[in-house]
Image (cartoon, rainbow, N blue to C red; front, top):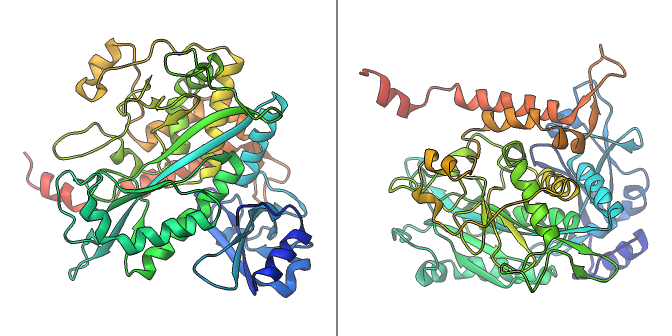
Length: 461
């Protein structure tokens, strides 16, 4: 279904033409979880009128307590997708609302505000993603293992046999992606055992974020149909490459359909506007990381490659051409790829953070310097600093520390009501709310004594 539906009438037409009986109506909370209700199509008028209600506190982290009024969901008709694997079912996404008005905690609403700000400057933010995932299972002892027990090569990237053994899964996924109008142009076995990637075309940022939400739901569901578990966890195995969620970004003139990042005369094919956007991402990289690498596990992925820990991730705030050791890679003219993000959080918040940081680079006319051509994995932290390259955060706690100090991101994410009965009318910055969530998450995971710590320290030294 390639064409967007722009009204209830168009939704109704698609529903009737495709014998749709039920619709999943969903929204996303701050940590990236999707919550949905199943709505019979006989209730379409109600769905697009009063909407459907959710207990926000039960749904997840979205700034509500048990005393709070319902989250109301009125779907965006442009998000209608026919669920490929379930005849009679469609899916719609919307913003979370409260008491009939916009709810400032809603990640989708936050992204839309940044998109509107870019539009005021004459830009349309377009972005694509490459979402890596692993197909895993549990063995007879309950241990997490790669689902394909024959996938044991030490360097399995692009392995034709590993791809062939999952042929039924990957071809089914490819057909679904193409049927959704996303133009799947490749599926490959990635660098880790059991790891795959499905490449899709880019679109405007809101459409792409909605696609990402549906893509994750689709991959996990199709894997279950094949008796496997699909995980987007950044680092499920110590000795295997982690899962990334790379962003490929550009700004366009929506009236002329011109890519404003493209310059055929530049050695890398990037315009001065694109370089300033890249400079903004790099300038805010440490705080930005808390939004795009948003879990404790994210920072186990972001380690330089060693024999024990394989990786294809950045460790320094740097950019270059077609060089995968950089944070920002200019692999083709007119596009900036960020290799920092993973898919353990909300794509709406990640895209909003990228756009806010990039626009700041444009507005402040930041300069990015010369591109790096070296293999940055060969340099120690001290050598990187001597080259003038800052290091990305080493933990979620460090990233949150920098996020709280970043006034540009703080302003971009806006203020939210303090939802406490004893604080009527009070507001705080969304960044402060988010930082508390992530600091609590860090301690909930990091403060637990793990078996490897017992093995190492029980009788040490």
